[in-house]
Length: 68
Image (tube, rainbow, N blue to C red):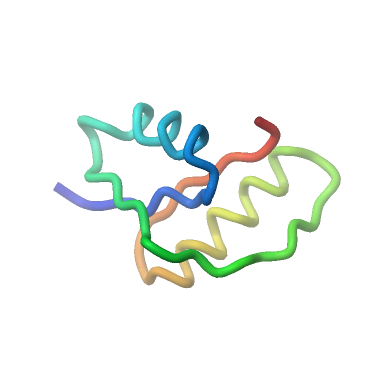
Protein backbone atom coordinates (compact mmCIF):
# COMPACT_ATOMS: atom_id res chain seq x y z
CA UNK A 1 0.00 0.00 0.00
CA UNK A 2 1.31 3.46 -0.90
CA UNK A 3 1.88 5.94 1.88
CA UNK A 4 0.79 9.56 2.19
CA UNK A 5 2.09 12.27 4.49
CA UNK A 6 -0.52 13.89 6.70
CA UNK A 7 0.42 17.54 6.20
CA UNK A 8 -0.64 19.14 9.45
CA UNK A 9 0.83 19.81 12.87
CA UNK A 10 -2.66 20.07 14.39
CA UNK A 11 -3.65 16.77 16.11
CA UNK A 12 -7.37 17.30 15.38
CA UNK A 13 -6.71 17.89 11.67
CA UNK A 14 -4.32 14.93 11.62
CA UNK A 15 -7.08 12.62 12.91
CA UNK A 16 -9.56 13.93 10.31
CA UNK A 17 -7.10 13.44 7.45
CA UNK A 18 -6.14 9.94 8.64
CA UNK A 19 -9.84 9.00 8.61
CA UNK A 20 -10.12 10.17 4.98
CA UNK A 21 -7.17 8.15 3.63
CA UNK A 22 -7.31 5.05 5.84
CA UNK A 23 -8.06 1.97 3.78
CA UNK A 24 -6.70 3.56 0.59
CA UNK A 25 -3.25 4.77 1.61
CA UNK A 26 -0.97 4.27 4.60
CA UNK A 27 -0.98 7.57 6.53
CA UNK A 28 2.32 8.86 7.89
CA UNK A 29 2.58 11.56 10.54
CA UNK A 30 6.07 13.02 10.58
CA UNK A 31 7.72 13.59 13.96
CA UNK A 32 8.76 17.09 12.87
CA UNK A 33 7.33 19.29 10.14
CA UNK A 34 8.85 22.40 8.60
CA UNK A 35 6.91 25.65 8.95
CA UNK A 36 5.46 27.05 5.76
CA UNK A 37 4.10 30.54 5.35
CA UNK A 38 0.40 30.40 4.49
CA UNK A 39 -0.30 32.51 1.43
CA UNK A 40 -3.63 32.66 -0.32
CA UNK A 41 -7.05 34.15 0.02
CA UNK A 42 -9.16 30.98 0.26
CA UNK A 43 -9.02 27.84 2.40
CA UNK A 44 -8.70 25.77 -0.79
CA UNK A 45 -5.69 27.67 -2.09
CA UNK A 46 -3.90 27.49 1.26
CA UNK A 47 -4.64 23.74 1.59
CA UNK A 48 -3.37 23.07 -1.94
CA UNK A 49 -0.17 25.03 -1.27
CA UNK A 50 0.42 23.17 2.00
CA UNK A 51 -0.09 19.78 0.34
CA UNK A 52 2.31 20.63 -2.48
CA UNK A 53 4.97 21.93 -0.08
CA UNK A 54 4.68 18.86 2.17
CA UNK A 55 4.86 16.59 -0.88
CA UNK A 56 8.03 18.29 -2.09
CA UNK A 57 9.51 18.19 1.42
CA UNK A 58 8.72 14.51 1.90
CA UNK A 59 9.37 13.35 -1.67
CA UNK A 60 6.01 11.57 -1.81
CA UNK A 61 2.28 12.07 -1.60
CA UNK A 62 0.80 14.52 0.89
CA UNK A 63 -2.63 15.69 1.97
CA UNK A 64 -3.45 18.85 3.87
CA UNK A 65 -6.37 20.99 4.96
CA UNK A 66 -7.01 24.52 6.10
CA UNK A 67 -9.77 26.33 7.89
CA UNK A 68 -10.58 24.08 10.82
